[in-house]
Image (cartoon, rainbow, N blue to C red; front, side):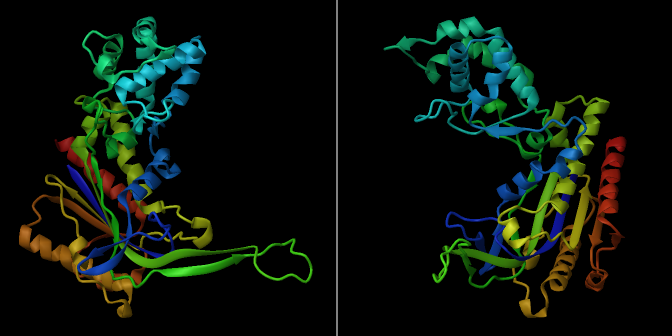
Length: 398
C-alpha cells in the first residue's frame, strides 16, 4: 500500500531555507520564479523533531555523522580497551566501511547514517576481531597505514568484521528515520537502503517577486554619551509564500526496511508509529531557519491524504504550473486549483487504486473552494487517525 500527502501552507515573511548566499531558496517552475524549501531541509526538520520521535515506541532513531571515533570511543573505553588501540581499530574499521577523510583522519570521508542497532553491531564486530585487526594494520615510519584496498581482501580481519556486520544489519534498519529516508554508502552498497518515503521540494503556488531585504541595525548599549551610530549593520533576505508540499510513503518498502520479511507485533507498532510520527512531523514541524527572527510558526491550512492499494500515486504540483494570481488571494485559489486538478487526474486516469482520500481544512471559509473532494474530517488528529485506520485495514486484508 501507498499513502501520499498534499499540503498547502502559507508562511509569513521568513527565511526558512537558505542558499549559499544566505538568501531564501527559489526555483523556476511553469516559467515563473517560485519560493522553494528543499526536501533535505524538510526531512531533517521532521526526523529530528520531538513529535516524530514521540510516536516511535522504541525511541530508536538514527544518527548521521562523520565522527566515528567520537561515536565508538566511549563504548570501547567501557569495554576496557586502551586509547591507542581504539584509535587504530576504529580508523581501520572506518576505512573499510566508509573511507577516511584525506585531510582529517579522525573523520570518515562521507557522512554515515547509523541506528543504535548498527552502532552496537559495529562495536561488537570490532571487539570480536580486536587483536586480529590490530595486528593487520601495518606501520611505516612509525605511522599506521590505513589502506582501503588491503582491508577489502577476502581473508583480511577487517573484511571478516565487515562481512559479519553485513549479515546482521544489511538491507534493513531498526531506526524509523533511516527506514523512511534511506541511506547511501558508495563504498559498501550492501549497507545502502532504498528510501520508503518521497519528500518533494516545497514550491510556492504563485510567482514570487524579487527577494526582499531587511536592513537592520544593532545598537551598542554602552555607546559613550554624545556618540551616535549603530554597533552593527547587516542585511537579511526574506520572502513570504503559500507552498504546495508533497510526500508519499511506500508501506511495503517501509516494512522491508524496518525488519525484512517477518514483522513481530512490536515491529508492527514501530511501523504504525513511524507513519504516525511522519504525519505529525509533516503537519506540525516548521523548518527552523531564522525562526527567532521571523517567528514563522504557521501550520498548514489544507491537507489531503490519499491511501492507495497500488501504484506510487500522483504529485499535484502541476495544479500550479500556471501560477496562482496573487491579487485574488493565495490560499483560497490554491485550494480551488488543487481540488480541480485532483478531479482532472481521477477523471483521466481513474481512481481504482484509491482506497481513501481524506482532507482537512483549518478555515471553514475554504470549504467553498472544494468542489470535488468529499471525504472531509474536522481535525488533523482525526485526519491522521483515519489514514492509519485505512492502512491497518489494508494490512489485515492483505
